[in-house]
Structures are given as structure tokens and as C-alpha cells.
Length: 201
Image: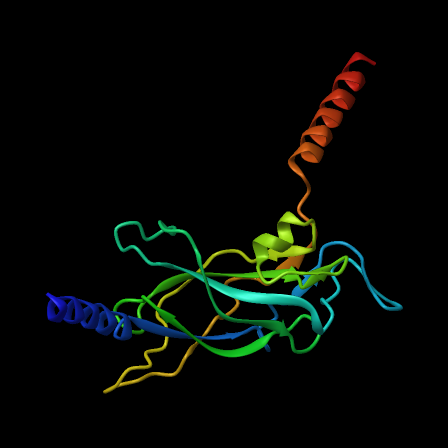
């Protein structure tokens, strides 16, 4: 019985090894920058709306992926999963974190859906290791559009291929706090009230 369990575990491990793809997690030279959606102050410098986000540890970015489903080719059918590493901006608006290996892409070097998430690394002395934690705390966050890579790099012999560039399909991302639902509702009610008043006049 013990041997059977070990054999099954080995088979699953082998499947995981041979289901991989590689992506060059970088927007360097692609024009798909990380920018500010609201003014942001770092020390004595104010980054205006549309300005490239400051370099350094102020913001964190991470790549997320979802399997490609040939039966539903126009959109992802599974939740996006975080991939390591996460990291900071090398220069303003630009990240360059090297090769990310995605276990689970089949066949090796196959297709996948991707998106990039960015978040403020800390707020009021609290550090955030994930996008969700930063978003829940009202920190600056942003998500790129989803993009499909028609193939990733294949790290496996006998014919390995280089990691694939993300290209410009994701269009960069804009960082700003997510409004609370209550604030959105109040805004919509206020807009509706103004329309009614105008019609009465």
C-alpha cells in the first residue's frame, strides 16, 4: 500500500514537472506602464494623474494566470492564480522581474491567460504582501486588462524555447484606491437626484 501511494505521488509530481510555461515578467520597452490614477506624494515629490508610478519599494507588482480552455477560447474559465516572484518597480512605471515559470500550462509552452496586479506596498505602517490585503485596506491598487498569450516559453528538453515576452496586450495598469461600495452607491444616488432636479427645472 505504501509503494502504491509513493508511485501515485511520483506520477503527479512528474505531471507537474512536464506541465510548464515561461513568461518574461517585464514591461520594459513595451510602453505598457504602471501609472497613477490619482495624485500620489512620496517625500517632497508629487506624482500627478497619469504620471509613471515611482521606482523602488513603494509599489509591488505580480503576475497572475488562468489556464486556456480550448472549448471556451474567448475568456478565462478558471480563477486567476498568483505566480512568483512579486517585486517592485525598477524605474518609474517599469518592472523587470525576469522569468516566471508557470506550473500547469499544458502542453509545455502552451497558451494561457494573464493579468498583472499592482499594489501599494504599505499604508500607515502596515505592509501588504498581497493585492487583496492592500485593496481591503484602501491602499492604491491596479489590475491590467486580461491578455492571452498564444504560447509561452518551453523550459523542457529536448527543444526548450526562450521565455515569451508579455507584449503590449495588457496595456499597463493604473493605481488608485478602490472606492467602497457605499461610496459608489451614494455617488449614483447623488447623480440620479441631480438629473431629477434638472428635469423639474
